[in-house]
Amino acid sequence: MNKPEKSNSDQYPKLLKVTEDIYQLKVRYPFGMYEMNSFLFKGDNGFTVVDTGSASAESQALWEQTIASGITVEKLVLSHAHPDHIGLARWFQEKHQVPVYISSLGYKEIQRKRNNTNPDWMRNLFLKHDGPELPVKMENPEADAFEFEPDGLFDNQEHIRIGNDTYETIWTPGHSSDHFCFYSQREQVMVTGDHVLAGLAPIIAVWSEHDVNPIKDNIASLERLKAYSSKIALPGHGDLIYNLNDRIDEMISGHQHRLQQLVASVKNAEKTSWQVCQEIYGTLDPKKFFAPLLATITRFLYLESIGEVASELKNGKIYYYRSNDI
Ligand SMILES: [Zn+2]
Image 1 (cartoon, rainbow, N blue to C red):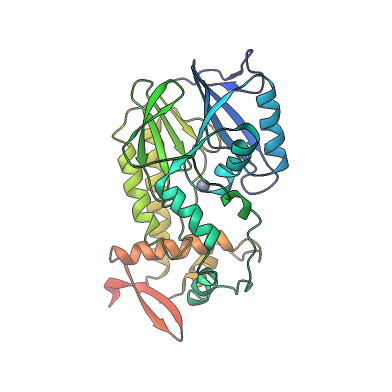
Image 2: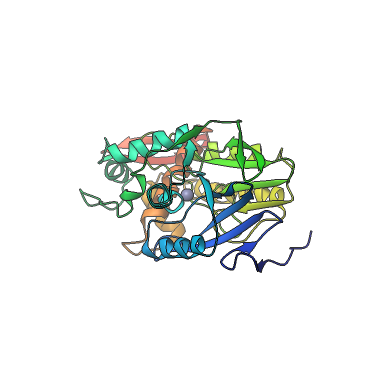
């Protein structure tokens, strides 16, 4: 299917028109992914907004201008509790009296983030996997994003109103354990959040002791979406997707490719995640090792869970080896 031409809407100058009732707002901010897609669904009582962008002055200013251009926001629905998606939730509540809806799992996640009962978990994980030492106290510059109380919660496979349509809530853990996609059968629209992106692979990693096997979850969640037919998918970052199932297949083969690289690298010698990470990604800038190492650790956890590799603890460090080499 050819891409319809996206154009700035005459009626709403800040928005890009996606379909008759769906609009896109590219929310920019000066860090992380730099840009996130908010989607606005037109309804009789105003727009339902899915995801907000970060709690930065830049994102806030854009929303301020958008609202000033004549947009009424009826409510906010959040796909998952990452700061770039929920960052302005409290601002919408306080400044514009907009009610905020998130999944029960997302709410649990923001409570955990606020309480942070295991601050050394990541540091210990990196040490166990032979990685560089993280600072004892890691500040989260985006911690404010978690400081809001939702007005309503939803769970898996419920039907919620977005704009004038009914959307099914689909739990898609992997990128985050609380991730949800939203599907309208009538409109054949899938809101994919960070579960499926067009041009890049979202990071899949263990972020806390509550994440057990995110790659296993992610692959199952990708397969789950293939049962829904859609004309258009609306991702949290980057371009819109017009061939969702093809993109899902690509993402699953992307996982397989990375996993095979890891299996090959421990074929003849036992290695730590950090050793393999450096083999695959090269020597990493001290500021840039975080995501690649976390992804490598997460891939080994998955490979061990399916019996492709085994591990041994030696002097406090975990070494992986090809399990059928024994
Ligand atoms: Zn995310």
